[in-house]
Amino acid sequence: MRFDAMECGKRIKALREEKRLTQMELAEQICITTDHLRAIERGRRACSIDLLVDLSLFFEVTLDHLVLGRTSANKTIRAEVLQAIEILEGIRNSL
Image (tube, rainbow, N blue to C red):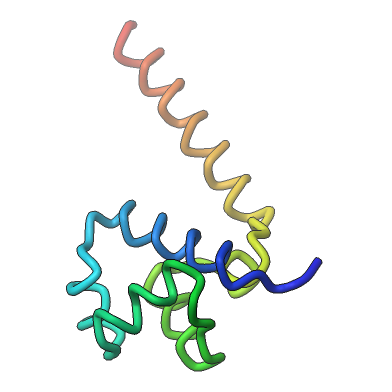
């Protein structure tokens, strides 16, 4: 598996949109220009390691996810636990 700047940019954009942030808001949070962020999201510019670390911390995702698109097992397990909690709460409410 190789680094693909375009795919990395798509992941960053998706994470930004999940948090309902504009490009300007995210750029301010991570101390880059809006033009720089726009170029990253479009895959025309790759992130530095320092910027990837900042984004990883900001979005609370692993570097593997940003760089390679891999999701950690912890994220999958967390999603399953949250789903189980919702089911149990639904059962409790129906009793």
